[in-house]
Length: 215
Image (cartoon, rainbow, N blue to C red):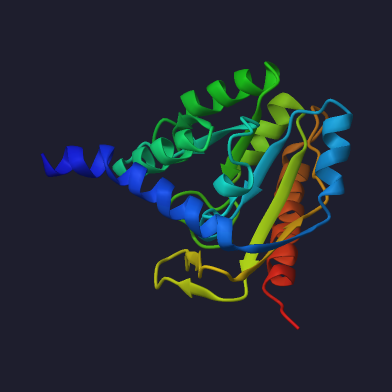
């Protein structure tokens, strides 16, 4: 009974809380033109951000139906998937630890069908700010550009968890920044794949540092 309450009730509670907090936030968006340009080009996008920075993005893209989110096959992943669905997102269950191959196949199909994908860069277990290679494999298979994005909050609660999860305080200022896209094509060799991973990780860390700086 408690398990069912957790699974079915909590997503509604989270949706209401996140939506109400989101309505109060003062948002500054930096470099979103790169996203607009990719969309004008008709490109399907692979979005990526850090696990500890995921909370604001369902609200930012609320009810747009722009992307499918990769979520963990764990019970916590089920809560995330159900909450994201209320914001208008579909989900694929999987991770680098469980159901990774089938998830990669499903994401590849979605991208080829014209649906953008959102992948948490450091996964569901971390290490924090260490990019996992699955996202490079997805870009290699599909040719879709990877668009790094990060947000920071001037006033926030930061949990003492592996990802140092950020919860913006209501009425806080929020800074969202998009990095320049990373492209991985079929000619990319194994050594170059590693360099692409490092390039993407560097860009994601740089924009994270920028959104965490406040004058």
